[in-house]
Length: 163
Image (spheres, rainbow, N blue to C red):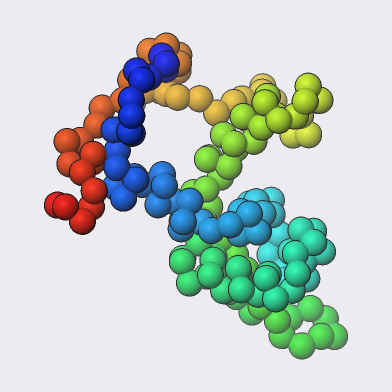
């Protein structure tokens, strides 16, 4: 995507921006780390606590918020010789975060990874070829960054309270 023209404000008012709304919806760093771990298959409270190093009170609060927001659901499980407990599974909405999280990982590998070999590669199951997150058109063709453009709705630039 070509460098956007100089503007004094974004073409989408912050109150209309779904990306800005998603930041509020997803929450803080702890919530994002819980979701990251869940995308790798972590489900249980103690496992989240151990892996992330999150204080227990914060973990309980964030899991409650992630369940209330519809990103995760609670499910009972019982390990041999112990009482029933809860585990936390991603919902369809939570699982849909896989693509944006993988795009962030790809960005981070390049810009934050300080030239180290990335800790993970995405590969196609059928032939083992490496894949990456990319822009594709409706026909499935990769669109290079210099061929991207954005279209904006007229109402998007107006604060939500003025409509």
